[in-house]
Amino acid sequence: MNAINPIFEKANPYLKLVLFISIVVVSFIICMVLGFFIAIPLFNINFSELLNALAQSTNPEYTSIIKYFQAVSQLGLFIVPVFLFTLLVSKNTKEYLQLNQRTKALSIAISCSIMVVAIPTINWLAEMNSKMQLPSSMSGVEQWMKESEAAAAKITEVFLNVSTISGLFTNILIVALIAAVGEELFFRGVLQKLLFQWSKNIHVAIIFTAILFGAFHLQFYGFIPRVLMGVLFGYLLYWSGSIWLPILAHFTNNALAIIVDFFTRKKQIDFDVDKIGIDENAILWSSISFVLIGTLIYLFYRIEKNKPSMAKLL
Image (cartoon, rainbow, N blue to C red; front, side, top):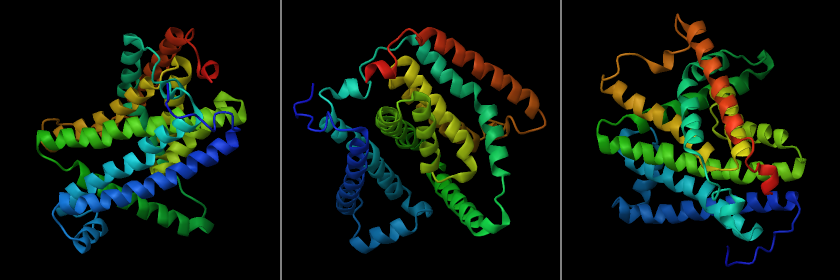
């Protein structure tokens, strides 16, 4: 139970959405400002040096600072506003965010397994997505998209380029765990619920939330697979009534990529996982992957179909 009276509990979905967006903006600004001033003594640098570090986000020399601000931004953008918002709209935060629903061990195993067997399908979709071209009239937009994609790839390379176990676990914490928890609480825990209350159609809410989830990452040539993952995460929540299952699936996807990249750099994995599904055996791997995904999703649905759905929990 929340100690604060939820003054917006009876507000209409549109007002709640406006309130949520406002809290997100304010929370992000405050957390980044506080993070900025904390960073100065934390990293023992002055104001101008910190600005210089942020301006050179792909410089390996400033990796620790960039990772710090990545964590701060996720905290301010996703986690803090979600809990502040729920205090204002619900008497019970855990119930509103569906953090209190019990999950079956088999459902957990299936949720995580889907992300493993989906690797060839995700790779194939990403490859198809990367080959898409906009009309010539939108060449400027397409060039901007390519430049944004390249910049994101450089930052990702700096993040993942670690050689120690401590560096690996730091990446898993920031890029996998915090990101999975924060993004799922934000998109599935709050936004999907608000869009459902607004549209009265859970499928519309799931799909539209997934589109926003894909667009948020600003990696346009990975938009389609990310949207489809968002749809999957949405249905995992809807069928199970537990936010923990999409969080675990999301974490598995991110952590798996980080771990595989780490051991590939150390040459302890002698094949390119990113090529599975787009190499000479693309049709075979993608077909097997697609069948396994469908089978696991069906099993998950059969196991969870009798549990309270999101609709019943609202």
